[in-house]
Amino acid sequence: MLLTRERISATIEADLLAAGRAAVADGHADNLSAWVNEALRLRVDLDRRLVAFDEFLSDYESEHGEITEAEMAAATRAARSRAVVVRATGTPAPTPRPTRRTRPSKRGAA
Image (tube, rainbow, N blue to C red):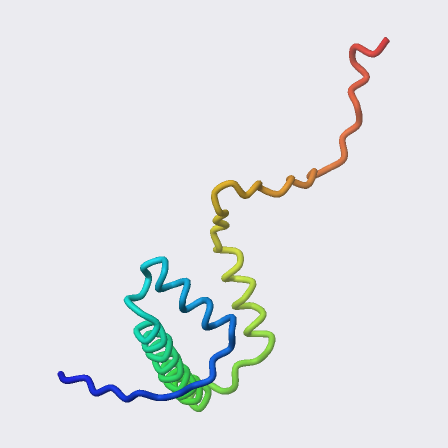
């Protein structure tokens, strides 16, 4: 497939331009144009997926009724109960909370 390209002039926010240049410098993209093209490709794909999800949701709710806040909250609780916590290397685990108060032992007290 022959790709046609078109030169344009665009105004880009400085932080995004810096991120693109850093990606090129780090070897994550061949050049700034390739990095911008990939970003645009990802956006087009995201938009396509969002439209497809909207259509799916509309079809589902047409057949089964509107999804309620209570159903969404229940689904969130169920998903969180099955979640596996993954921490980055070097990130300390939170201090566990005591499950119950304990009294100091009286054994061996003078």
